[in-house]
Image 1 (cartoon, helix red, strand yellow):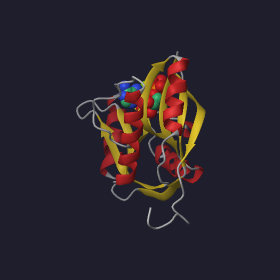
Image 2 (tube, helix red, strand yellow; image 1 turned 90 degrees about the horizontal axis):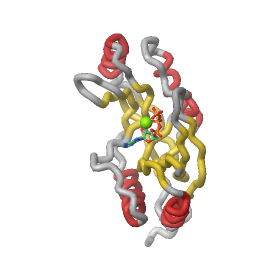
Image 3 (cartoon, rainbow, N blue to C red; image 1 turned 180 degrees about the horizontal axis):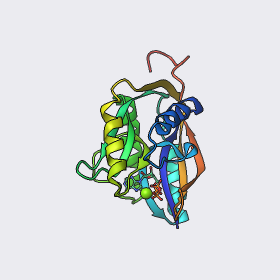
Image 4 (tube, rainbow, N blue to C red; image 1 turned 30 degrees about the vertical axis):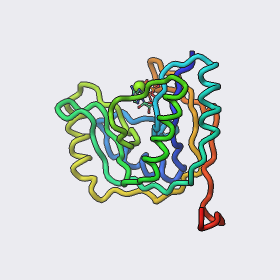
Length: 188
Ligand code: ATP
Ligand code: MG
């Protein structure tokens, strides 16, 4: 079984900007810079044949390149925040792509999340440490001016995740190109 998810990788300059944000939060253990990503669909543990089916489905998706912007920080878990993240400026194209991946996952028998898709880039997972909560809440309150991007997204990926006692290790298994609108016929 392979624990898998589909995601958008972030360009190095965007990861560097997020690393700066993380560096300003001394009470918080950050997600390693190389692990920063935007999850589209979490797939859970799948047997390899099912992953092959999914790969076929994803490879058949024809969708345009995206232009995304990170804007502000947010928390999941209001009373006991457990996740500090950068939020994304609204993108209909991103929602559209995500919905297509979710449909593809359903088609091969994976039931994804019931919760509505909330695009985010996790910066830190917060334990039960109140100092970390305070630090994160302050960061969110002061984050109105934080923006990174816009940046172009030319592909999405299928990742294997190995979790353990330390930071998770992700490996890109496949990548799926999004088409460039430049030079595309305007009537399409
Ligand atoms: P760890 O679980 O060790 O803290 P991780 O969360 O980064 O590490 P995974 O649990 O394999 O690693 O998750 C991979 C990606 O999928 C992450 O972006 C994570 O937020 C997301 N994810 C994990 N579980 C779910 C879930 N039940 N619903 C939605 N997204 C999930
Ligand atoms: Mg996890």
